Length: 208
Image 1: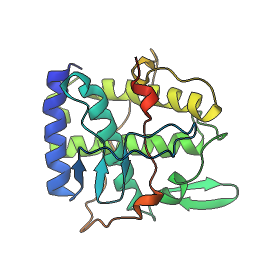
Image 2: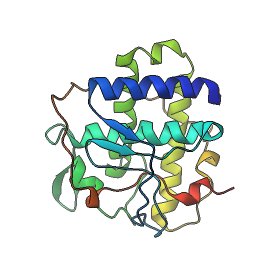
Image 3: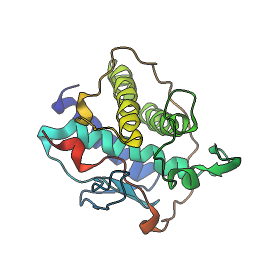
């Protein structure tokens, strides 16, 4: 996907989630040292707002993916009865699971971390479908599916304590094609405690 097309898609998605879900995007990054390796995160959420930063037109892929994935997590957190994940004999809702320290947890296909992350990707893909944007770009589902699979490889390195590469360098040649997940609209989103929110990507992923 080129930056020009992604900017168009990003603008359409931003407008749709603001109008339909009341989720607002702030281009002011909220840096928090809550990443597993202690690096500053570059994207987080509070239930009502997404703080994803503005990385410019030349880095539109990162801007889009950061916002896209956090939209999925925001909606996921608002459906505690629909999204639940197992952890040490307990059943946690998406927000409780997302706030855990994921270091040392498996992110392989079939794991709860894998399911948690893929649910977020599929939710956002479903929103793109609901908005009509997905149908206008025949290669978008495949591109997002590859980047989602690459994100899992990145998280596998991150949570395992291994050195990570640029996020954009994680591009597996084989990956499952994601299916959009339809999620009903919620009447009103509320803000969670911002201090408990987690970031999605870290600054290290941006370094050349």
